[in-house]
Image 1 (spheres, rainbow, N blue to C red):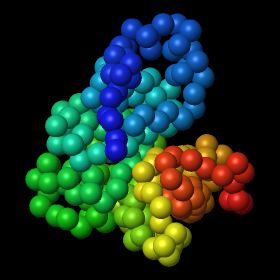
Image 2 (cartoon, one colour):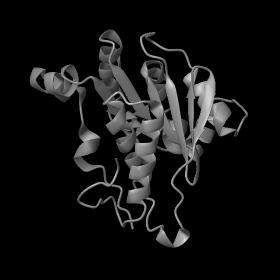
Image 3 (cartoon, rainbow, N blue to C red):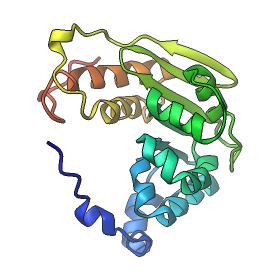
Length: 213
């Protein structure tokens, strides 16, 4: 069972972020800034502060669609943050919900990824890259008006234990290579590796040492 009690996380205020010591550590010192879309339900103001800072300082700002209900019920604040996003992550269900909410009348994940990547940007320093996972189907990456597909690591059904955390694991793996300025192929490969590991274990757990190289 899952008890979705956000507890203290639901009480976050932008005043905390604005404290000089917090801002210096969490924002000023960072070159890459990633925020989960779920945070749109808590403090959109904090997201905007970070997003605008990233645009002003030519940093990389990234977000996740996170869940279909975010695209549906937090559409306005998501749209406000979207122009600042240099990378948008999501899965096929979230992408299709985003498409439906915006009246695009398409369920084609490649087409949706392309449309999201071409959404107007607040800063021209970085292009927007959209990365959509599709479970066992290839990862869709849209950039520069083109779509690339990357195969995932196929797993026999009997080895699939728990898909919780697969999306977050993918993003974690992806970002581990992005911050090292590796090409997109390597970022996706690491994302697929991390997701593959986590779905073979119960809960969001990892073996002590990774075998990725």
